Amino acid sequence: MLSFAPLQTPAQAQTCARLMAESEPWLTLRRDYDSLLKAVQNPAREVYLALDAEEIAGLVILNMQGAFTGYIQSLCVAPTWRGKQVGAALMDFAEKRVFGQTPNVFLCVSSFNTGAQAFYLRLGYERVGTLTNYLVQGYDEILMRKSLAPLVGYQPGEA
Ligand SMILES: CC(C)(COP(=O)(O)OP(=O)(O)OC[C@H]1O[C@@H](n2cnc3c(N)ncnc32)[C@H](O)[C@@H]1OP(=O)(O)O)[C@@H](O)C(=O)NCCC(=O)NCCS
Image (cartoon, rainbow, N blue to C red; front, top):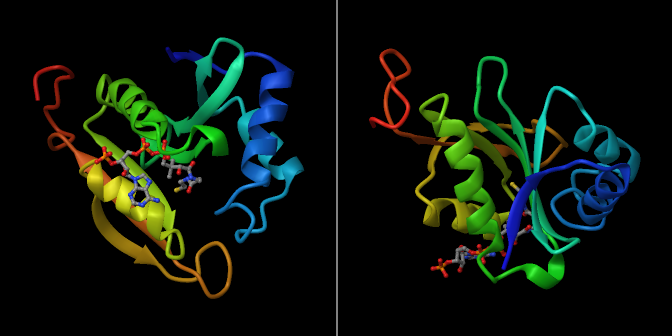
């Protein structure tokens, strides 16, 4: 039985950074362990873990500030946990957090990450546009969105 909780300890941050640093898409995007450790420890982000007791099954990093409030910056399921609905459960958790405040969830997925694109389409995300050569030369980032309602007049829980 998985539980969901905010990232709390330096050891958890290190495990999250290692999970991402050893996995696609971060390998192709040339994001190393140190930069990913900074990302998970960024106080301007919210990081939530899917936990099986002490074991980290996956993580999601959310940005609840700025123009695209409700932006999922990163989602990663540990290799041994993939294909077991952990990613879907983390997305459900993140969507509840975002939709409790604002009607849009945004995310980017790399053009080469066709598996994750299928995953997000399956969860109801729509392609908004293409950010050509955005992170690394030769690959695009595809901006996706799930929306409950226009921003103006949105009342959480009533969409
Ligand atoms: C993409 C990722 C988050 C999916 O998490 P997951 O736990 O393996 O996926 P789930 O088991 O929750 O799958 C949910 C649904 O998406 C589908 N799906 C998941 N991965 C898929 C893939 N690679 N190709 C096609 N469909 C996929 C599943 O079949 C499932 O459909 P169902 O509900 O009809 O059974 C995970 O594979 C991962 O961490 N990948 C590496 C990092 C990454 O790419 N992150 C996204 C960066 S934008």
